[in-house]
Amino acid sequence: MELPRELHRRFPDKKIILTCAGHKREKSKMSDLLAAPDLQPWRVFAGDLDLLELAAVMQASCPHFSGDTGRRHIAWMTGVPNVS
Picture 1 (cartoon, helix red, strand yellow):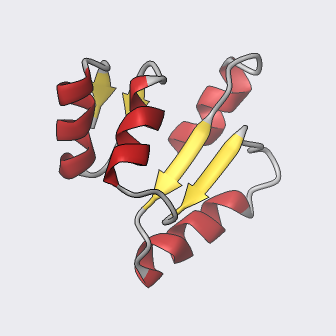
Picture 2: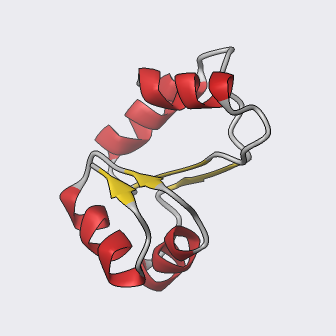
């Protein structure tokens, strides 16, 4: 949970987009992350993207950070550098 905050601190001019799956556990983690006062993402998609929408968002980003190997594969398929 520190990585998004540190990226935001170091690169305040970059637009940070956060996504998560629609599961209760994932949404709970997202809520915890968004409660931090020092993180203000540009956009948040909390479980409301289908696979094609997620791929489009990822394709427009660089780099992509993920704790999920499934999303890592999507980043790889769209040619986006990824850190998992």
